[in-house]
Amino acid sequence: MGKIIGLTGLSGSGKGTVCEIMKGYGALVLDCDGIAHKNMAVNGIAYGEIADAFGKGILRSDGAIDRRALADRVFNDRASLEKLNEITHKYIREYVVNEIDKNRDKYEYIIIDAPLLIEAGLESLCDQVWVVYADEDTRLKRVMERDDISREKALLRFKNQKDISFLKKYADVVLDNSGTVEELKKQVYEILRVRE
Image 1 (spheres, rainbow, N blue to C red):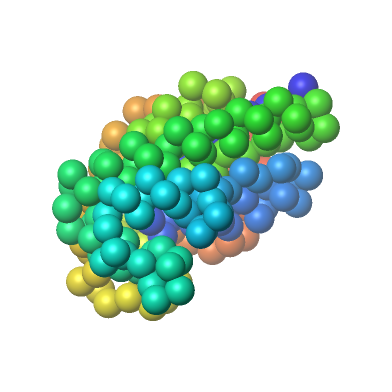
Image 2 (cartoon, one colour; image 1 turned 90 degrees about the vertical axis):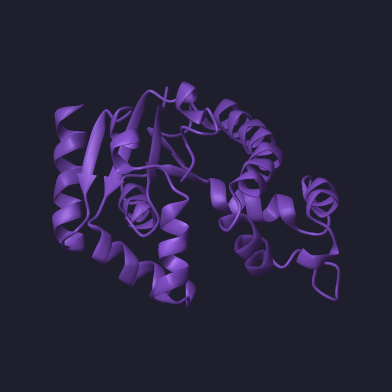
């Protein structure tokens, strides 16, 4: 029976890096952002509800959801963000539960990589919750580079996220990713070694 690890952290904290390290240990990674993007595609399960809720202003000329326009809308308005989460979380949970059922006996570790792990109620599926942490300057730099956005836009996203102290309340493990990848690898190795 595989161990279910819920992985969360604030934007730019380095969840993706932890996932890559865990893949090296043979883990199956369920990428909730990736699942959400698939669900939002034109033929995706959440497309109609999102288009109805947010209107033509978030659609590109080909009918696809313009994720950047949607992000600008929801990161400026808490009610819109809550509405989007209400639509997307139920489908993500359904997918994750199915994948765990199908794969639990095939993998030693299954990682639920979810920025909103707690808010979506996915922590209830986990044997452990891992929170990845990095200082704000490091996170800002990473998000600006990764998403090609201004400092102001990155800070606006940060403003709409829970505080790290909220996440740490749920954490079985806290990983500090303010340093190098090697340092992070060492922390993961120690955690897996201790918990065998």
